[in-house]
Length: 200
Image (cartoon, rainbow, N blue to C red):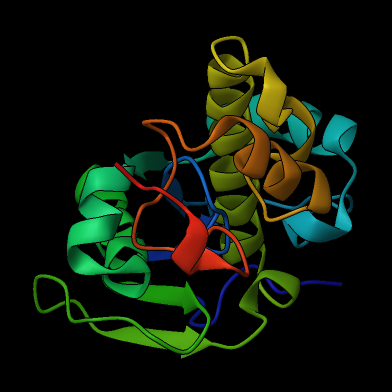
């Protein structure tokens, strides 16, 4: 059973990102404030849930939360600032959308940067421990998947509808065959034999 949050009786948001290890598409983060009486026995780390369950949870979370924010940080910015900084930026921009602003932030993982002097705590595997981080992980994952399914229509040969931009064998084979698109992260090692890939 996941706890609601790290600090009971404080207005605390959970935040998480999705798509950090992908070769294409944005890194997407979400932040969410859940009410004190929130409870859900299905909600868990988004990676532990089926796509159907995640998609059912999303409207439920949006309807029952106090506030939520979702942010995509796109490929050009990822290439400029690196994926870790882009992930943190996405989380901070999502927190900025929350009204009211939280008094404490809990972050999935072990890296974050101060945001508006709000105290924060990093929690490794936090999406499997606290409902507010798990809720953020579900929002981040479903919004990012939705975006990847949309751009799949433009470049179906990479099968982003299925692999969501992750470095599967199929995705890498398509990069070898068709080259890179505007949605690929040019700063990433897109193929093991990176030196032979024309990134222009």
